[in-house]
Length: 297
Image 1 (cartoon, rainbow, N blue to C red):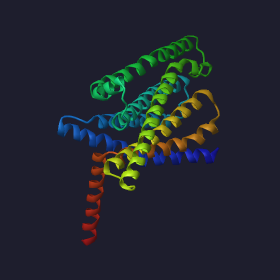
Image 2 (image 1 turned 60 degrees about the horizontal axis):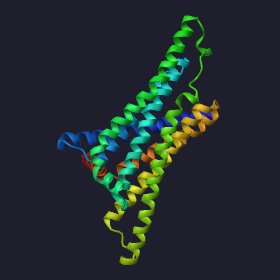
Image 3 (image 1 turned 45 degrees about the vertical axis):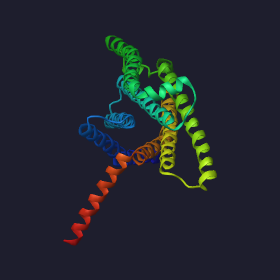
Image 4 (image 1 turned 135 degrees about the vertical axis):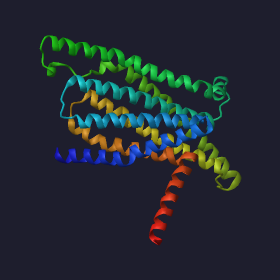
């Protein structure tokens, strides 16, 4: 158990050094872009929303980690509900990002699909609002239920240990909608993969294997969505394990995979976005210049 706890601490340390700075970098760069240009492209809006969810999730985790000694089931339940809300939004935002890439890369002669391609920019703000609103509406009944239970326990002078953890049936709507998002995500990824395979075959036949810059961008987009797919599967599996299993060893084992997948997603988000990659290169260039000037002195 000591070794598993050490692994958990190392995972938290890696997250602290890489995950939070990476998401803060994404958020700040896109915020500055929005302030400068008075607008933000769709893909940057989606990436920013994902980074905000990641920051909130890690802040919540750190708050929970700092209060581990405070063993109260009511607080644990509130933590799980808030974490579930953030996870729900994160999965749907990443699904919208995958759908965005799919609409840009895949061409389908279907009236509904073409209509979605043309109007995705208009409906995106409403999608954001809808997801946040649904997450709040689904969480309110769960919060009220356990607040009422805590009130009854305090009135009857019952120990909090007799309270129940959140049951899977209480969050069934969350899980169903989350797996629905995963289904949409998977279909979009399949469409992107199929389209890219056909495009690569055409390029090899026509140009002897030459890869255009547009092709490179599509391949990077594919890397991004596949990393998101793996990350979202790990997220859902993690929460399913938390809700259905009280085996602490199993929870400790899955945490490192969860941490690694989140870091890989952040890297692919930055690498796959021209503005973010350019800003990161500028930062490294300035740091290199500073080091060079210091060495010369």
